[in-house]
Length: 139
Image (cartoon, rainbow, N blue to C red; front, side, top):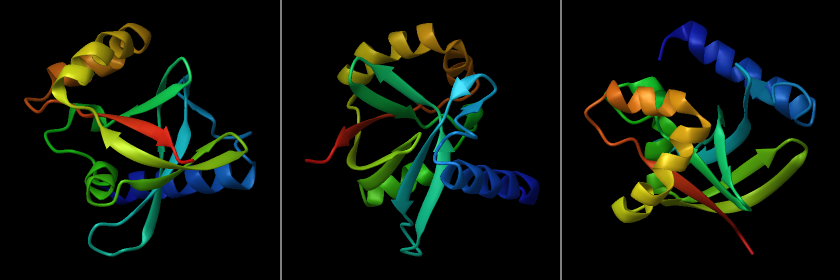
């Protein structure tokens, strides 16, 4: 990840947190949430802005990285430690990140692409299957 992009992400996270989700809650017209997970190597909590897909009261995030050939670091982190924190606007909650198995992904993916066609375009850019992660609210 280049330095400019890293600084942009860091600034976006700070703005979102500082404003309680009033600023930075959209990016390019898409809704944005903050996803915090523990680094798989460093053990440090990392927070990234991600675009969610809502299906009723269920929330998913898509590890597209714009169709890059590799999974984003945040996805690798939550694979190693699926206990995450989610911030949606001013609300923060704990969740378990569950990577959808192929049959569940096949069920949800067409709805994601119908709502956000850019994710379908990202899938055509890469040979990897873009993971979909269900954020299950902790009790």
